[in-house]
Image (cartoon, rainbow, N blue to C red):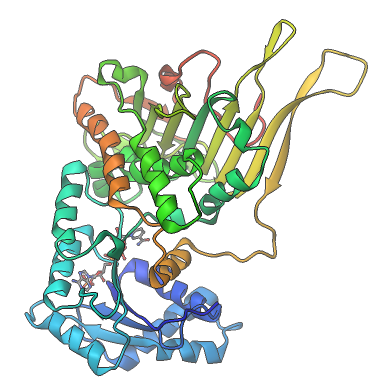
Amino acid sequence: MTQNEASTLVLFGAKGNLARVKLIPGLFKLDLANKLHPNMKIVSVGRQEESHQDWLTNIQNIIRAKYGDQDLDAAVLERFLSRNIYHANLPDDPEAFKKLSKRIIDEKLSQNLAFFLSVRPSDFANIIDDLAAAGMLDETNNWKRVLIEKPFGYDSQSAAELQTSIEKHLKETQIYRIDHYLGKFALQNILFTRFYNSFLEPIWNKHHIDHIQVTNHETLGVGDRTTFYNATGALRDMMQSHILQTLTLATMEKPTAFSPEDIRAEKIKLLNSIKQIPLDNFENNVFRAQYISGEIKNEGPVKGYLEELGEESLVETYAAVKLFIDNERWRDVPIYLRTAKRLHENATYISIKLKPQKIFNNEFSDNWIIISIQPKESIHIEMKTKVPGLDETKTRKIQLSGGIRMPEDETIDSYETLLLDLIEGNQSRFLHIDEVNAQWRLIDPIIEKWQDKNIPVHNYVAGSTDPIASKIIFENDDQFWRTSINIED
Ligand SMILES: NC(=O)c1ccc[n+]([C@@H]2O[C@H](COP(=O)([O-])OP(=O)(O)OC[C@H]3O[C@@H](n4cnc5c(N)ncnc54)[C@H](OP(=O)(O)O)[C@@H]3O)[C@@H](O)[C@H]2O)c1
């Protein structure tokens, strides 16, 4: 369905990597799918002069590089190019933002303005100040929205400072905080799967579930991003938002309605009900490690983290955390979150272990429900059955597996979904400030505690499975890491 109102997307950082790789191709895809209003325009803002014609050539090159020449619909390409304008906001010009505002008025573009700040997080506050000073955030006659991309600060304090500087000019309904994971289809499908399939809800609680694991593993190392990574670490990079958001969708209560407001309200409630890590029993709840040299499948021998970095560091490339949600549904069910670079596989999934079943004098605990997010989008239910034959005692595990995606299905990039949400004013897949704050409240004490050199940084060989010592965070000996979405023995 095409939008029913015109709008103008103002893209700061239009010459940057994200704009080139995701945003411009994504906007073209939305146009191709007839999702954009005929009078939706895109003003790309850069810091250097560039002619209109050069900018259009640049856009064409980006689109041809992404989608190839063959299937490109000339009429849609023409239509897309006609939506685009380049505007130079020269850094040394004090009138730059006034000129931008005037340009939008002079070109008779819609005053429903969506600002996508595809720039460094340290530039967010200044750009928002300048937009406000130029009167471009005033919603008296039209809506004004600003999109910023995670990270929202690097701890609670810096997140609060960012918030203070932007809430001077913007209401919460105007701020679109991206965690691009929330644009992933498999994540969007979690709530649907949970609440539209009647056999799941009755068992989705502490009475039937033994524990939950949320896993994000990569075979990739830190590569040439050592400076960034050593200032960030696995916990901040992946767990603070992506993994906690994934957990939230898997465990939140059913919203009153599937409206953006109701979904966000339940997510906030869930995040606020996660208990703080007990600092007096830290080592049984939190674990960190770094990869040392090893061998990665299809890649060969690789260096260890400290060799790549070239200096000593306490920064973790593996983080595992145990959490508890203090509400009726989940009280006392351990939640294990983990993320790592240079592990044995690339996989993001939620694995849910059901409680053991007592039959006669034996306990059986072979039931898992697994929701795989990437690279496979699939759902698996693991069960125990008898092996056909005369031996009455022989059993085996089987999996009922379903791929969510069929070959003919559309592939939609996260940014396409999120760009459309921004233009249409749907905040359900964007983070509310209360979510950001709740996430930092959980992560801050861990980061602070990890400044202590006496807390060990364990090692694991690149390409291996989880470090054995990480088992320390399990509640009991029957619990263990799943190392694959496939059946394990
Ligand atoms: N790239 C990705 O895949 C990716 C993924 C997730 C998140 N992000 C986030 O997305 C944002 C952009 O990332 P990126 O990789 O595209 O960065 P980038 O390649 O460094 O591009 C940033 C662009 O912003 C421009 N810029 C900076 N200040 C500006 C201003 N005041 N007005 C207009 N343009 C301005 C820069 O222009 P100059 O050329 O003049 O310096 C540069 O072209 C960052 O917040 C990043 O964390 C990126």
